[in-house]
Structures are given as C-alpha cells and as structure tokens.
Amino acid sequence: MTSSGDISLIAQVLLFNNKRAFDQLVRKYQSPVRNFLMRLTAGDRELSDDLAQETFLKAYVHLDSFRNLSEFSTWLIRIAYHTYYDYIRSRKEWMPMDEEVIELSHHAVQHDSAQMMDVYAGLRYLKEEERSCIILFYMQDLSIRKISSVKNLPEGTVKSHLSRGKEKLAHFLKQNGYGT
Amino acid sequence: MVHDSDDQLIRNYLKQTEKKLSDEGFSARVMRHLPGRAECFVQVWTLLCVVSGVFLFVSIDGCQLVANLMQKMGLALLDSGILQQNPLHLSLITTLIAGYIGYKVYSNVVQ
Image (cartoon, each protein chain N blue to C red):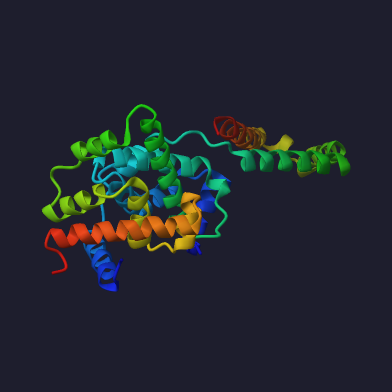
C-alpha cells in the first residue's frame, strides 16, 4: 500500500491541482524510475530521461486513475514500462530487432563506471522481453504475478522469459569473471 | 537450468550496481512540461457551492434579509447621531466598507 505521505500529496494534486505536491512526488520517485528505464534502455541516459519525463507527465494526467491497490512506485513503474514498450514498438515499425539492439549499444553512456558498463552489456545480451522481466524481478522486486500484470502477459510466459534471461545473464557474468 | 547460486549471483550483482541518481534538473524539466489537468473535481465543487449558495439565498428570502439589514444599519446610524455630530466618521466608515468590498471583488477577479 502507498504511504500516507504519498496519498496526501496525491490528494493535494487531485483536489487542489497543487503542482508543488506533484513536484515532491517527482523528486521522490525520479531516481527509481530513471534507474529502471536506464536498465531497460541498456544505459542510454538521454533516452531513459526522455522516457522518464514522459512517464511522469502521463502519471500527472492520469493521476485520478491511481487506485491505491498497489504501491505508487509500482504504478509509476507500470507506466514507465508501457512508455518504453510504446517507444520500442514505434521503432520496430521501421527498424529490425537486431539493428535496434546495436542502436542501443551505440547510445550507451560512455562515462559510467566499468562495472556499470558490464551491467548494460549483460542486459544488452538479453532479448527485450527477458531484459524487462529480469529488471522487474531483481531490481524492482516484483513478484511474477505483478510482472504479468505490469506486462499484460500470462504468468507462464513471464516465468519462461525470466528463466531464459537468468540463464543467459548468469552465463554472461561467469564469462566475465563474476561469481568465481 | 538455473541454480540457486546463479539466482543469487544475478540478484547481488544487479543490486550492487544500483545507484541513486541525483536529480540534476530532471524534476524542474518535468514541472516545466506539465500539461493542464482537467480540473474536473475543482470545477464541479465550485459549481456545487455556487448552486447551494444561490438556493440557500433564495430559500431564506435573502433579498429581503439584506434590505432589512441595510435599513437597520441606516436607522442605527441615524439614532447614534454620528451623522449630525461628525461627518468625518461617516465618510471614514463608508471608505472602509467600500475599500473592503472593492478588495474582495478585485481579489476574486484576479484569482
């Protein structure tokens, strides 16, 4: 459940159109949302920030549809995922999948630490569906049921994406000297 | 086949590399691009208050009440003898009342 502080801020935005209250929500959740999108885009900071901005703007417009059935952060992550998914889908219309993966790697941030670059390299190693399942499961600590709800996929499909993603990522990490 | 050790390896690795991103103007950028929300609730609430106010005013015969009140105020002023004794007091009171009403009207228009 969402904390009472967040609920109070949400109520202020909805009832009084208090933009300062929304600003506080943005400041509180910008890091997890941007981190999530950074992982999904395999380290493309510019793209992830654009998608994060779009996520918060969508959240602002559709705030009245938040039903407090889950954490506010989970609700934001769901919007972020769909924003990213819409972006990928729009790109796929004119770019094949392989080129898209290469494109992501070209845009990857150059000034992050070597360890971060390894993470992004590892995530690029996965297919988009596997990558998003891995990130939602390990980094957002979502259950398989919640992931299936966020991605609108059957739980069985999520499990198989997760299993393949884990296998590939573990293989990648071991190859690069982790876990030895 | 994924082992528990692999599971732990991935979990630890991804968590270790998770860092808190500093804002760096991100929030300000979002706030600059906020679109206008459909302030449905605020509009409905305002309409409800106005309708209730008008209904109440009519149902308790507000015009008559206001007229009576004004009449009593005038009579009280006459009875007190302020008008005869000191015209400066009257002009001061009138200015204060007119100023207050003017201020309220102005602030409502500005909002």
